[in-house]
Length: 40
Image (cartoon, rainbow, N blue to C red; front, side):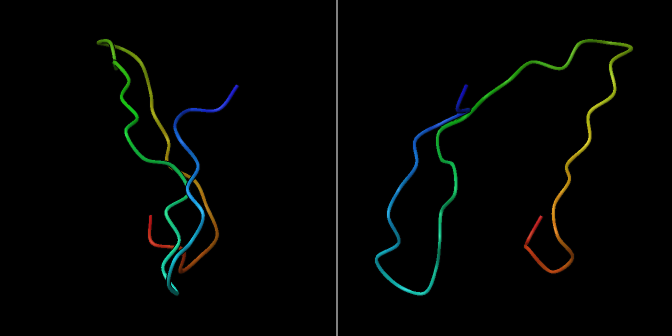
């Protein structure tokens, strides 16, 4: 299931997902993963 809207790039910048939100509860672990240099 997608996390947000997918936009077509209009320049050399790409917005993969926009307008997403989530809740992190106490005791949970969150990771942000991606390729090296991807702008995480």
